[in-house]
Length: 337
Image (cartoon, rainbow, N blue to C red):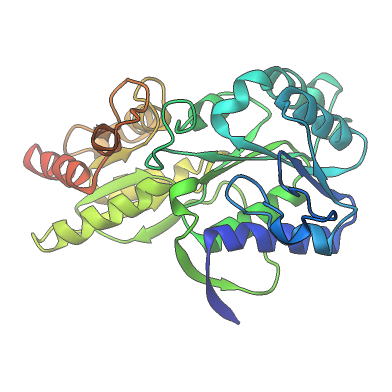
């Protein structure tokens, strides 16, 4: 039976159910236990935003606080995965990947290839992504394209609590390394989520709104900005179809191409920096495989090619808005052949 919970609760519940079902599933990261088990148990932090709060009391042998050294514990998680465990390591902010990127893209991503398919690395690296939290340039980036670029990694970025729970459980059960990206500005977003454990397959995009005039392809927070834009456009008689990618690697181009073939127009929305991001990838593939179906040029809505500002006013201007998305859709309608 479904009830409404937040994305933050969905992550907690997925980890709880995964650890209860499989003793090889372990969680490690900075302050994910936060002193629980000692005199300060009631004040246990549960990670920087309290996502893992309460899990230590249920699974004390499967929860591990780590030193403030991403290179150490991400490397340890990858090594544990190669030795039969199923670690879930919390990188906290995706921005911190710089100090442990070698372990991820040169080791974990390549083990299966380099050892003839005999080595498996079932590790999940959870990380917060995205701007809008007033956390400045070093804690606000959408670095999903950097991981999607690497063969051997699977990259997930859900837009709601239902997808979060199903995709996280799927990630933990998967035998390949998975980068699981959680948009910090969606942690409070609620929707209906079943209490029972379930999975959502990788590489299956979700059409969150059907339409006939233009396709919007996006993921994460931008799904909600696109839905807001669609509501405005509907009042103008323009019905857009919104494709939520859910996973960026593997990428469900079949659903994208099918939608673009139907609508004849495409707007790609991506919170990542505009150079070599997911929007540019989608645009290029549509041009290669469905160019004849296009009735207008492709539009992309992205932030400027700058670091994320700390100023609240500038940060709000930096993040793609519903108004910008609606303007891009109107441009494709106006520019139709």
